[in-house]
Image 1: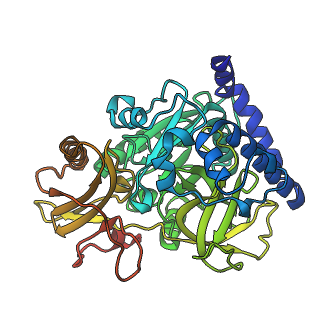
Image 2: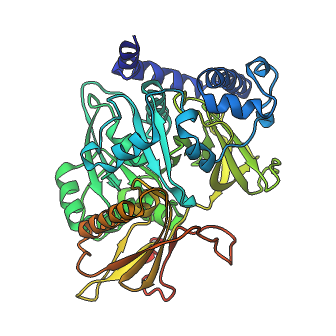
Image 3: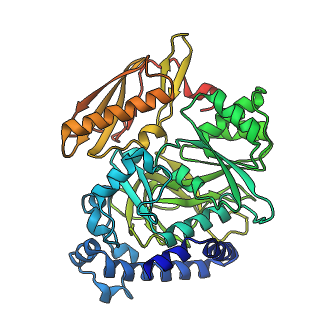
Length: 472
């Protein structure tokens, strides 16, 4: 029965059904959206307290059981952190087939890239800007809902079953990362996909793009910015009808470069491994709207009190469509401010004034010909090997790195896996004969003394390469 149900939820028919429902909700008024959000929260809580042993015990310790669902408010629920989730992973998830150790082995094996765990579960992993490993699982129904959400509201794709659209994606592609996972999930009856590794030589990507001629271009904002620069310089000649950026900040300068190069405004997608479709810009005003029919968004201060509109606070996320790995009042590492001003477009969703805390530094290295080359920060944001609990990358010299690693389990095996992964990263950039690295085991990684916050990447202080050659 489960196999039949999962097959239906992963089918093109169900995707089209969800797509239509998601699209229809864009015409609802605020009262309807809020009622929908409340109903979905109650439904998720009932499911979670029935199927997740961790949440049952966690909420019971705070005086909350199934009997309280009708009257409990979101703010009554305790905060969940990534550390709590990962420490209790096997009892957090609502499916007994999911085990952390098995998932870590699955993700670490290159033969599984682009595949689903046990043929049905979509796995996304990230260390994020917190440096703490996170594994996020989507069941067939969860994943299809997410696809419908992003296709309808972020890519704003129009269905044409008579002609496939060509989709090119530039980012980190050799793993179970959020961006490439979603790109690979584009329905094959609607899209042909060209994945481009942001860590491969740019010349190869340009040649493939010129031959492919994409209708739609997506990927990391910095990567699309590089393509825009190449288009302006005459090295690239493509004419996409739509462009979507995510993963790293779409700065005004990058956005302007993309508009000048391709003649269209890029859509900024706010995505995370916890939910790859949190918010996106509207077409009318280019404001970032939170899709709060499928999420509960709280912006809280350090005392866990709501901030005033327009003030920055820490994002606490509740994902209302993931029934496989419930994330309820989950503390993100992002800071944002909501905007109380009405947008002026037809969408009924609230807007984000600004997102902070998502930017990491590029690492620049010197080649034998004295030219500089970089490793994209997302490579380390998404760095994962079994046994690695946390990490920090420190550039100690122009062509030397120190990997500070917090390890759980067999130290020798984990260090070998870290070295193998780093070797592969350097080979892909053809930096393996120029850049050396050391691995240092540590028990903890301190915060930046200036900001009081954790930094995943610490570049060389004397930087001769400044922010993406003018695109930063």
